[in-house]
Image (cartoon, chains in turn cyan, red):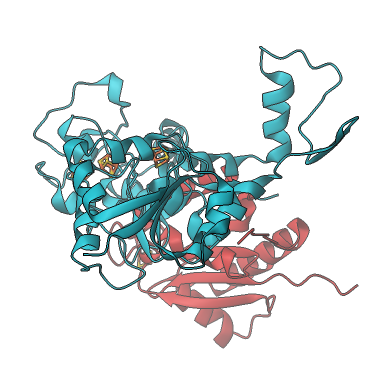
Length: 317
Length: 138
Ligand code: SF4
Ligand code: SF4
Ligand code: SF4
Ligand code: FES
């Protein structure tokens, strides 16, 4: 069998997605059996110019993790797209913007102000900020342009497959590898996970119970058998795609929503808001106001992994 | 420059608010022409996604009209709506969207003039706020 040519790249990422590939342990040998890795910055010493020298479409599959937050990452996404037959958005950051896309609740100048002036470890009375071009005696230095808006991979280049998860679970990664090896990938555009919600595959008992108070996970010891949402803990299950094996739920922790919205749901946050307001059973205005107060950070909670691909995408500028 | 004419999307429940709008019409009450009505069976059918989608698709303001408390044809639909809209306003606020762009009003089938008043009020308020222009990077 001719080996596949595989590239892996990290953009705006925490590195966890690359580590998840390494977490396949001895199975990584299966990957190496079916594929030659031609580019993988975390593990191998290939540089960008090596990729530039490759022929267009000469990489079979590119697993791209991380969001796109500056011009360098956008260039890399476009370069790898041109060189790859199949582009896979790997992990929640690439699929939906992920945790980095929470930065869409602010903007570049606020972020710079915080990072280069306000942060307690800074001494920056001249207010020096990174610039795309800086003249020095040796010539001109360049930095990538930092964007106001963090983007998901699919908002920059066409993507064939989406593998969600922060990071994607090992068995899902192996499923992808297996599909690649046996040439049994689903039709392009597919998300490699379940179609339905996490609640659908969650083993917990649902009793259609209403709630009248929200608890943060550290405030109560939840019953390990019963639905967390019905115990007042915000669990994103009703608005989140299944396919992770309910791994947080198994650890008695609520789902944070890292698999993104299920098939047919346009906006994960709006869906969750709807579910939560439905199950919260209060009627008079004062109590409704209390409910609103208890849900401390709706945008950050309901769009934790997906501001970029949410319908409104970012805070208004 | 021409005066800004806001686009208002109104989701009205079939049993009360839509009938109220109908009454405003048959009674020939004049009101601002900025509203586009979408009839739903109950205000509880208005998924917050609809509101966000309306804004995204070019609406400058959104009205949700339902039956007064105690009058919902499906008993509890409007309470659910009240909770959703309250929480939605907090969420939209975090996204820099003024809360006066989204209105929830209880309008009965007998309240044709109240309907007209609400439409005039929301139109005036949203006019004051200006267009809901939204730039996207994608
Ligand atoms: S999806 Fe999660 S694990 Fe992967 S890069 Fe983003 S933050 Fe890290
Ligand atoms: S809300 Fe959470 S705990 Fe409840 S069924 Fe859904 S996934 Fe399971
Ligand atoms: S339970 Fe939710 S947050 Fe946890 S891995 Fe699954 S989808 Fe992600
Ligand atoms: S039927 Fe009018 S609000 Fe439910």
